[in-house]
Each structure stands twice: as structure tokens, then as C-alpha cells.
Amino acid sequence: MGRYPRIEYNGGMYHVISRGNNREHILKESSDKQYFIDHVKEFKNPFGLKIFGYVLMDNHYHFLLQTTNKPLHTIMHQLNNRYSKYFNKKYLRSGHVFEGRYKQY
Image (cartoon, rainbow, N blue to C red; front, side, top):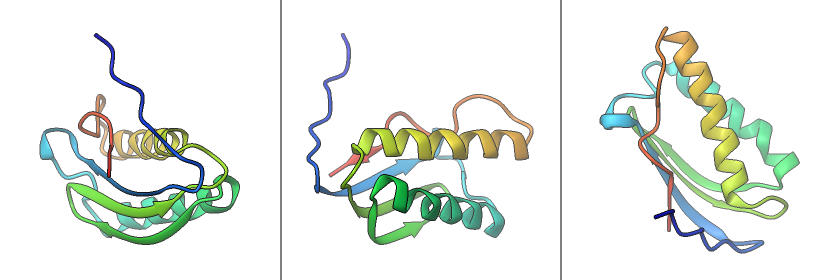
């Protein structure tokens, strides 16, 4: 059975969490954290993303954000996809970086 679609609202505020696969570290070095933050900043204007707060831990991250132009699932797909490609290339690995879908509250 497929997953249920997420309910999203234009202008909705979300607490978003995404964790490393098997709870492994996904933000190992300060350069990884900087790449991730730079990547999020790059998405802010084109996607109409408003970020009110964030926490980067070694094995997961939290965001408190609001969407305006694009749906949350589009933003999160592109964010996690790009970071996964960066991470896998940098650490000479393959496969999943994140554990399942991101969680939103």
C-alpha cells in the first residue's frame, strides 16, 4: 500500500526533521554543515522559503519554516537530494543518506 499524501498549506508553518540513515552522522564536519546552510540559503528566495530557526546536529536537523511559493515536499526533495549527492561523493559512498521521508509537524 502506498503512503498517504501529506497535507500542506500555502503559507503553512512547519517543524521539519530529517535524520541520517541508521542514525548515522550526516553532518560530520563543519564544512558539511556550512555546505548545508549555504544550500538552504540558495533556496530561500526562489522557493519563497522563510526560515525562523534551525538546529544542525551530527545525525539530523530541525527547521522551523514557512512556505509561500512552492510546496514543502518539493523543497525538501531538492534539499535532501542535493545534499545526499554531495555527501556520497565527498565520502566515496553510495546509497541512502537520510532515513525515510522527512517528518513534519
